[in-house]
Image 1: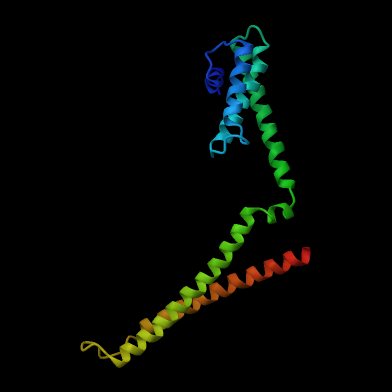
Image 2: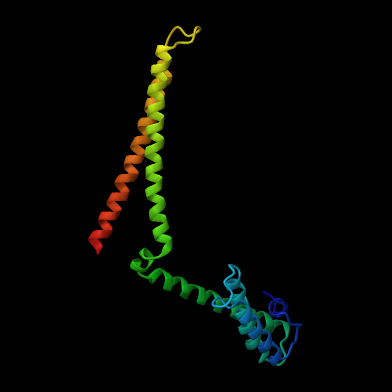
Length: 186
């Protein structure tokens, strides 16, 4: 980001005074703080305002900045942000699985896994039932132009239903194994 963009984030003209920067940041912080503003984009705006404030305060202390110093400051700031991001990522990577398992995200995926397994079984059962009943109805009430029952289509649909059942059984087995492993870890 350019220094002018940081000023724009705080809604200030370029080369504003230190007091104006602080006042604008306090205003933005009250407006976008996640504890006060529960909009989805408020947290990002708060982080961006804090980043702009930190950068402007850091660079404001230097009286005269030529182009070389400006690019050096921006590069130092970029490295600082990357290090900070790495530290955050390491923190989240080290967070315990227990905390993750108790989160809303994990519970919602667990429900989704169960519903997917049930849906797979339902689809496989429907294909099997419609295949068998369709073939029986076709044998009882053949079309006038059909002299031979469609055995090939019947066999293909049976194979498809068996494949769907096997996929559903494999997903059920993996879900059961995962739950066993989690219970053993406790």
